Image 1 (cartoon, helix red, strand yellow):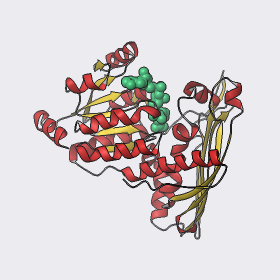
Image 2: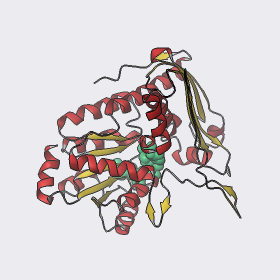
Image 3: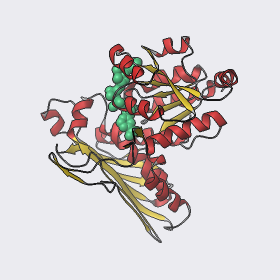
Image 4: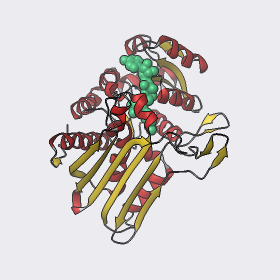
Length: 350
Ligand SMILES: NC(=O)c1ccc[n+]([C@@H]2O[C@H](COP(=O)([O-])OP(=O)(O)OC[C@H]3O[C@@H](n4cnc5c(N)ncnc54)[C@H](O)[C@@H]3O)[C@@H](O)[C@H]2O)c1
């Protein structure tokens, strides 16, 4: 916190200057969303792709830097949002935390449990870390978690959570990330957070037919049976297997069955259905819809919370141990696929 507090005094807390590291698909959404925040100014875009980085920075009157060292040397921002590919989260996040900066890092926290632990340890050196588990800011998932917390469905007995998207995402990732991490980490978080129980042991299977056929060294989908605390059992499933032309980019469901009630989340559409020349579509109305030229919804709310918590020194709504727990579960899923056996979820304490 030391670095941020020094800056806070210098800028008299009017606005915080945000830097976004990574200006690809999600970084551009973050930039557009951040440009609409009332208590923050989008000050810096960091991307090694000079053309892309300066284009995105130019759209919002921000300054482009090619790497994080240049941005830190120029004191370009008070807090950062890291939107790099999944496998690159660790080093940049650790560097920023060690420089005393608050960091919102996109999910998954990291691609490997050791990397996630290194990031959590770096929090102790000055900066503060929040992992962007975006469903925590989604009114539907959030209300589900709250209802279970309030005892409205009694004791959770079993649950499932999963999502599929179309193969275009797998092709775009081109082996650079796994279905488990780019996509499935949302459900790994939702199942544990909503039910209030930890996944302790997994038995997983994957299918890898379509991606290799399309020339990409990647799996298509994972299915997992989970043992959970308090005797609960669960299922997780995720894949980039839907055919091109499916009307929704997100085919996601979560269920938790309790002794006194049921949670049933079906977010395959958000109420808007359009038939146009390209056929039927079900546009996103909740995660990051553009409304009157501004990004609204879960992403905006996640950023708004991050900025408010930094400015007012509040606790982040995504506890770092929960994000570590998600990486530990994915790690066990990958081990189970490899060994063909059930695998324990490793301890994620640091
Ligand atoms: N919250 C969500 O629902 C959600 C949705 C999509 C993606 N994501 C996450 O966002 C992150 C980014 O995903 P994406 O699809 O935008 O990736 P992307 O490949 O589209 O963009 C990554 C960007 O990082 C830049 N980059 C790569 N290495 C760099 C480095 N060392 N220094 C500076 N810049 C570098 C690249 O030039 C590129 O512009 C991932 O962690 C992903 O899981 C989250």
